[in-house]
Every structure is written in structure tokens, then in C-alpha cells.
Length: 262
Image 1 (cartoon, rainbow, N blue to C red):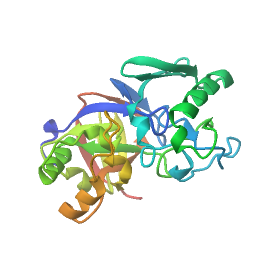
Image 2 (cartoon, helix red, strand yellow; image 1 turned 180 degrees about the vertical axis):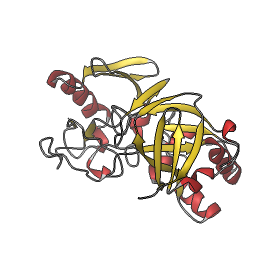
Image 3 (cartoon, one colour; image 1 turned 120 degrees about the vertical axis):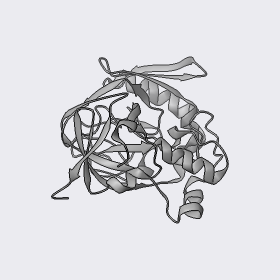
Image 4 (cartoon, rainbow, N blue to C red; image 1 turned 90 degrees about the vertical axis):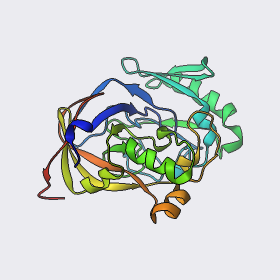
């Protein structure tokens, strides 16, 4: 790891509803073995699907509305009230729908909006799903996604154009002086602020990164660009929470030690 004083948290994000825009956070407390609270806590099934809230299990993202195939989702701005579980969706700053995700009426309001807004992408009526303790993440294990902004800048040099870091839909963006430094943390333990993480794997990218997170245009080919430039499609790393704590913007990232077990 480079000079630890130069590696800091730039921003924090959670995605209350899978496929929709994130909510920016100034700080967040996390528990061991968990994701960020309310990260991908809800998803929108594309027609009635296989998810059973009484027996929740990880399902491929193809079961849900997602950016990889449903780029129009990126045009919706998101506000989420943790206290009331209320989701507000906006277009160009103007509210288009609002509903409490933990009430049948609130979900119905959002589902009705999605039925019209995503009409051309739907296999059936959209259905908002949730189960206590379940997260609709792309990988089955509960983890946090970390992206290094120095690696974003290196990718920009490779492709010859700006790359919005939010294409990678990370929870924690860090600012380092060394691109790809995060890949060297796989199999090791790091501390971010008051929280300890085990870095478990590199993140293999999908076509969701091709969508501009502001305009919803499918205007890049990120996995292909990574393969051409670096011989792989990895960007960012996954980490599990080893010890509970709080992360804040500006917190320092430090390497603790190699992990004893995986």
C-alpha cells in the first residue's frame, strides 16, 4: 500500500432499490457480515418472478429490472428516507412518484409508475420485492464494493475520454495515488475509518457500466475496453465487513495484515 495518508474515502453510496440511482451518504455504520444498511434492500421484478420473501435466496439479476438491460432506469433521480422507507423518484428534478416501500399502497404507486415508464422492457407487471435481512446484490455473499478513483483516471487515459466513476455503482470510492492498488489487497485485511474489512475478490464488470449514470445513454463499452487495455474485465474489489464500525467521507484507508483464513 502507498503512503496511507494519501488513501482516503472520497464518497459513500448505497442503492436502496436495485438498478436505481444511489443515495449519497456522509457516514454509515456497518455490522460484521452485512452490507451497508438498506443497500439493494428492494428490487423490482420484471414480471412475477421466482423470489420468495418467505424463503429468500440469491437470484441472478436477470430476474429484476437492471441497468445491464434496462438503461432507462438511470434517468430516474432517487431520494430515500430511511426513517419512513419512503422512495421518491424524480425526472429532471421534478417528482414523478413517491411511496413508502414497506406499505402495499406505496409499492403499488411505484409499480404503477414503472409499468408505464418501463413499458417497452417489461415481461409482465413490475413487482417490488423485499425480505428482512436480504440484499439483492450481484454476488451471493454480503459485501461492500470499493472502487479506486486513481484506477478510474487510468482507465480514462486508456480509453481517451472521461469516465464517470458512478458507472461502477460502488459503495465506497477511495482516492489513492496508485491505480490498481486495490487489486493487491485481495486476500488481505484493511481498515477504513472505524471499520475492518476482508478484501475477498476483484469485481468483474458487466454491461451495466456501459450506461451513462446521468443521461441513461448506452455510450461506452467498458468491459471490452478493460479487456483490450488490460487483458481482463475487472474493476474494483469486493470486501466483507470483518468488524463493525462507522465509515465517513475523508476517513483513512490502511492495510492491517494478511488474513489468516478465507
